[in-house]
Structure formats: C-alpha cells, structure tokens
Image 1: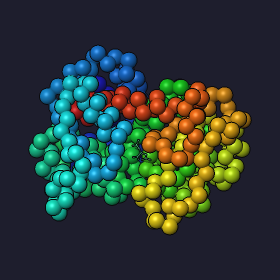
Image 2 (image 1 turned 120 degrees about the vertical axis):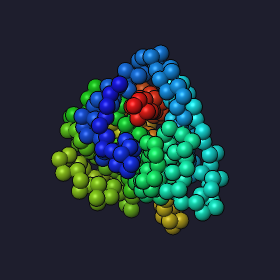
Image 3 (image 1 turned 45 degrees about the horizontal axis):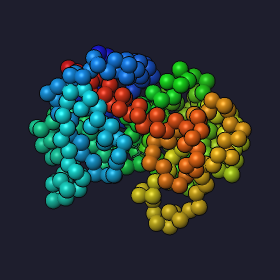
Image 4 (image 1 turned 180 degrees about the vertical axis):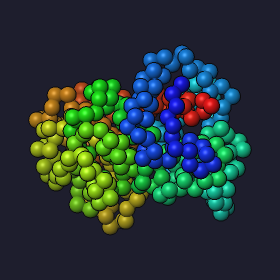
Length: 310
Ligand code: NCD
C-alpha cells in the first residue's frame, strides 16, 4: 500500500479536496498504484471488507457516483447513499457542517458533489472520516484529474513534452480546471481554445508560469489541433451560467477538424457530452473518452484503498 502523505487538514484526516494537495511525486506514485490495482484486482477483492462509503450528491452524476460505488463493491466494501442530496435534511435547512458530522457516524468515508464552491471543505471541517470532493461548483474535481492523467499515462507513458489542447467551456468546467492544474506540474505545454466569455480564468492562466501556453479562437481549432498530442473537450456548463449566456453559439468538434491532427492524438472528454462534438468521432481510434470513463473505477478503487488503508 502506498502512503500519499496528503496534508492532513481538518481533524487531521487525509481528505481529498483539491488537486493542489498532490505533489508531482504524489501523483506519480499514485498512478503507479492505480496500475497495480488495475492489473491485480484479485488482490483487492476483500481489501475494504467491513468499510462503508457514503455518497452525497447534490448535483447530477452518472460516472463519478457509479464508479465510486462500483469501486467500493469491487473491493469488498458497501455503500450508503442519499438518492438525491436534496432529499436529505439539507432540504430542511441542515448545514453542510452538521451533515459532515452526522454522516461520519454511519460511514468510513464520504464522497460529496455539491454546486457550491468549497462546499466539500465545509463538510470536511466537521467530518470524522475522510471526505473526497467529487465536484464543488465550477471549482475542482480532483479525482477526475487523477483519472484523466491515468488515461494519458497509459497511452503516452509520461507527460513531459506533451502538448495538450483544451476545447470548450474552460471557465466553468471544474474537470478541466483540476486536470490543467495537475498537468501543469509536468513539462507540458497547453493550447486553450474557447469561445469569448468562456476562457480559462485569469487566476489559472497566471499560475501557468512554467508551462508555455497559447490561446486560440475556436475558428482556428483545426490549426491549433495540428500539434496537439491530447485534446480535452468539455461541454458548456449550462447549469452554472446565466440564461443570456446559454444562447451563445458554441462551436463543436467534427471529424473534419481531425484531418491534420497527429496520428496518435488522444481525444478525452470527462462526459457527459452534449453537442460539443460529433458522435461519429466515437469510431475513430483517437477517441479515448469511454476508456477514460472506465479508468475511473481503477482510480477510485486505488484511492479508496489508500484513504481507508490505515
Ligand atoms: C464532469 C463534472 O461533473 O464535472 N463530469 C464527470 O464527473 N465525469 C463534467 C461535466 O459535467 O461536464
């Protein structure tokens, strides 16, 4: 078992709230451990026997919740969940802090998704068990970043020297935010291709001091793609933006954009995809998003084992 040495904030517990908690060495050793878990699943069948995961989702989810739950079952643990966070006592006015304290009495680990930025930190403040952020508003989605990097590493072996394009809503997409922060720890360069009003935040752009980056207009997508090793596509985060912005004409990725792309380009997407890419790309060997979704289970099996091992 590896020890990630995550900084033990809030009640001295190893919560996973932001990808910033992970050093490059942490990520490297964690990804090696994920590979070990994926290739030796038989060794982990009972590793979390007797442990209970609570999933608290106050926003829609398919992949994140089900892959965490699947990971828990595959390693011998059990899951309790509130069908929809809003059917819990939060609806009656209970605070997130009280919820953290109470759910800790029933579970050994809590995975939370909530529309408010830093909401998971509030739960972690009072929780008596580790808390994992499964998405807090448009802020962070650290386990998505880990599975994105795992997917890239499986194909490309390492990250140094890679040019990675991010296309779509880069302002509100928490998965892209966390993944960019994780990749920026390596010697990677970036291409950001987004519609006006949906650009990467200044804060994140400014933090990329050591990584070269270029910003492109979506009309130059084909051009920008020529040098990319990976293209990460995100959907418009309709639920996070004002109604008037929702009507923005968004450009979408088509097969013809790929004409001059590298033969080993990987197209990633955290999913769900809506209308930002043509579905006929699915048959292209460059499409990796369904494999990416599958890798979520291995990453979460590994993470649950790391956090619950002690
Ligand atoms: C993402 C999310 O919820 O942030 N989905 C996911 O977890 N795989 C991406 C999205 O909703 O666009």
